[in-house]
Length: 335
Image (cartoon, rainbow, N blue to C red; front, side, top):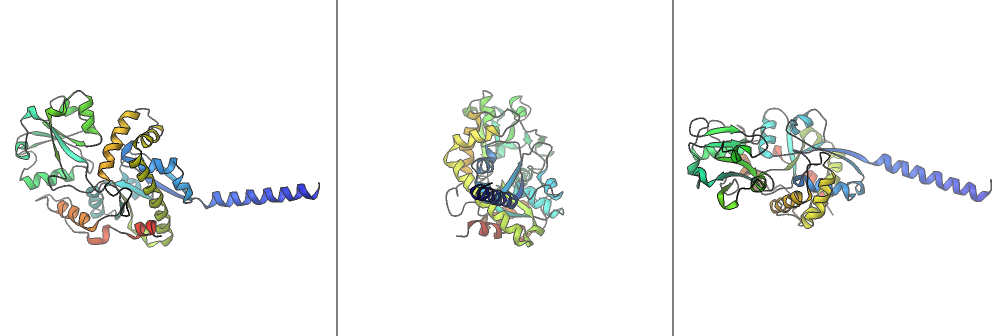
């Protein structure tokens, strides 16, 4: 063996060693989504597909959700580092003993609304009295119950609440005057089923003054005491924000990436592109310095909404600033 071949072997061994160390250095992060793969979560899939997580030295596992998956239970069982959840459910879980803390707020507007057929006689919120209304449960009922409390309507007395599956069948089959919908998803399922937009009336929770924050990122409070965890999650947020900014700029590219991650094969490019275009309207901070920043005023408004549910408030105690932290966001956005 000549000196040159020995040198080549040494260089190869050194390169393999460096590569091994680099692979070993990849820090693992598991994120639990609130629902199945769709454009509602495009930013995470885009960040993974375009290598943004890898560039930050992260090995990220994105776990899809579903009707039988509770993100709160997943993180409580230490099967995820961070979860995507709505603030009503997160704060209710915190009060029940799972100390969740919001570290970022990707959606800064609510996409939740009640969609009604005009033929049912509903044109204003006052017309909801005496009607059957479809409502999602599993933590999604809290904004609705607060709204009804604000209107002075008691469930099963002034209104009939129908526990709605994650579809719009009760409205299509005339079992309910109104159903819960998201502006980027179920509302369009109604349109796709052949109902004209002119035959519908919608009530955005945002417009009714009872909107609560949706699709925030939450971790367990104890984890924030670990500087290494904060640093790792800061990298996760930095890459995630890049993914979301790309998704907002290019809905079609984001839709293609989402469809490629749907193992069920039910997601279609046209539907996911439309969904992404509507999701983008809920991220008014995209491409700006405040991307993912939880505004204290929005947090306080949500807490106030959740505590003002009359005899059945969502939470009974104000968590103060204990349920939110900018530490990870600061780590993600520092120059």
